[in-house]
Length: 345
Image 1 (cartoon, rainbow, N blue to C red):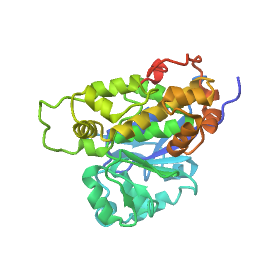
Image 2: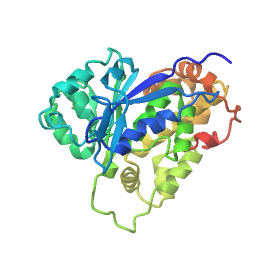
Image 3: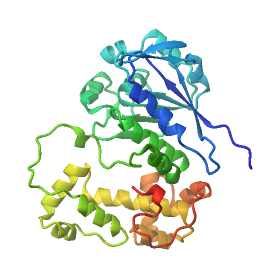
Image 4: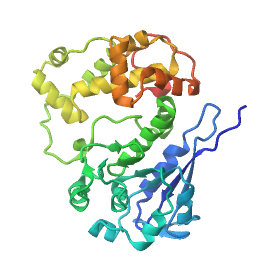
């Protein structure tokens, strides 16, 4: 067995007033990521502004063993939300103690925030000029407080390379799964999601969670349409055909689809085809032309265009990076949406 490289170290910064649920997300998601030999891919440690008890928003405190010096050893720093950010939330500035703690972070360290933890990164200047998000209920305040940040209130998370932010609460799960997927491929992230009993990827953004008037009860769901679309990703999918199968107009179908999924039918189909291509690239040796046909892109040129746009790398580079880590057996070419039971949505 080859010696294992040092796991990627993640330091989670626990601040007073933190939400225990959000504190647990990095430990749960990253802690379940394993390589093909079952070895952990991440080391997750928690620190505070000082070792000792840290009050939460619940009726208990947590005890952390590490002080802020731990941040100097981290490859990734995660800042969960807190309800007691004080001047960070009210005036957009760090306290002296928090500024001293963040000064331990080495240049090049990946920075991640969950929910209103983004206030800390913004107050420290890490988000200036960058796209970021936070809980939808705080988005307007966040933008007023930090005008140099390009706030996107509609997404579940943002990825700006070395700085990533998530929307409220459970969106931290989406972001952490995205990071695992980015670091180690869809197969590893999907296995983590399966063990955590959450979807590997959620459609849409925060818009679907903002309270709106209830839709009329007679309106049918587009769930069945999405299932049919998944079964036929390798075929041309025309909006007019999908609407006709639902016995509604194209306009009505598009509106219902967006209300339920948070994205347009075209965006949803493209996202699903990219995910299908990822699984095929990771888990099969199919030539690129066949991967393109199975994923619904038609040609290798179209596959390259869409994979490059979505993932930032070519299909060949993606396969070279993640194919070796895939331990499941190779799969038959025509297996529909359930390319692998462990990576099925």
